[in-house]
Amino acid sequence: MGLRRRMTLMAVIVAATPLVLAGCTTERRPAPRPVVEPVAPSPELTLMPADLSRDVPLSAEVVPRVRGGTISAVRLVDDQGAPVRVEPREDGSAWVPTTPLRPQRTYTVEVTATGDAGGTTTRTTTFTTMATSNKPQVTSTLYFADKRTYGTAMPVTIGFDPPIDRAARADVQRRLFVTTNPPQPGVWSWVDDGSQVYYRAPDFWRPGTTISVRAGLEGLPIGRNHIGDVDRTATSRIGRQVALEVDNATKQMRVRRDGKLIRTIPVSLGKRSTPTSSGKMVIMEKHQNTTFDTRGEPNGGYVVHVKDAQRLTWGGEFIHGAPWSVSDQGHRNVSHGCTNISPANADWLMTVTQIGDLVTVTGTEVRLESGNGWTPWNASWGQFVKGSALPVPADLRPARASASPPPAVAAGTPTPDPSASSG
Image (cartoon, rainbow, N blue to C red):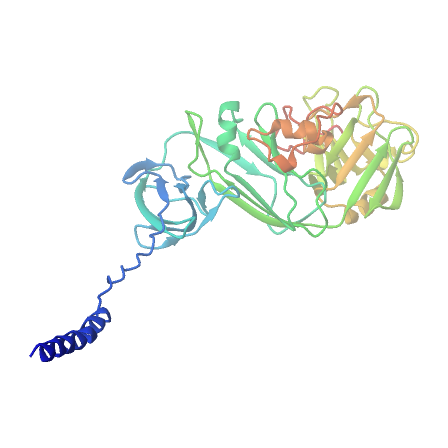
């Protein structure tokens, strides 16, 4: 009995051992946790004009402010659902409608910003424009016509009546746009009295360049008492390079085309009592026939009909045919300030020059008054950029200030008057 009992107990123990081993293979492990993808942060975005704004100027722009991202889409529609095209400023500070907004209309802007990590934010604002203003308008004149061919010295010139006060010039300048193809960026520079503003690049335009201009002034508040008149636009191209060099010492004009001398012309300039101005001028107008009426002017009092006249200054200096002084041309000065040449040379020169060609006069008794005509080339680049009402881009700042010629930012009469001529 004892032996059988021991054998039975051993059998029970042996039989139980596989159960213990089998129990280890059924141990449960913790379930895996779900993977949570990180959410990309959305950029912060605010818009101007503010939502539900009223009496917004017709010159309003869409001004988004974004933190943590960049603007990826801007959409502007009017209250009829029609889209209004907008273009970004070069620095991305605002989106500018390409045409002026209409009075007492409601517009809706939708702007989307994309974050640096990929998230997006969309904001919408609705605003209503002001009624037609009863403030007096500033009359603007764009001396850059559409679909023309100009010389390589052609500045973009805008005249203002009344002149623009210094405090308002930055606001006006922000609404003046120029694009060039191929790119040749420049700077705006004001005359001292605010009657004109010029745009030019550091060097002359390259032949073949296309220049597009927009003076987007319609509805722009200008100071406290005035408002801009209309939007003005033009696109034209730059033609061949032509330059005229007039030397009082030799009484000769050298005509160069693309740098090559093509003709030398005898001239008679202004006599001592009515001298011709020395300086860098630009051909402003060309007339096959015109009349100089100087009655009531100092040293004037005459009326004369001339042919082939090309204006150089607001004050009335022209290059023109002068059959009465042919014997003096190349020898002595007898004019009232104009550059006299023979009728045959004047007729030929009209076929060669373009509005916008550079004319340089040297050696006379007086210097060209800055602003008397289109005179931005009568200044060094360092002097010219000082006339800007806005900061000059870093890549257009002169390396150092230049001490020579005086700035092209002085008063000038912005309206040409063919009768105001020296003859």
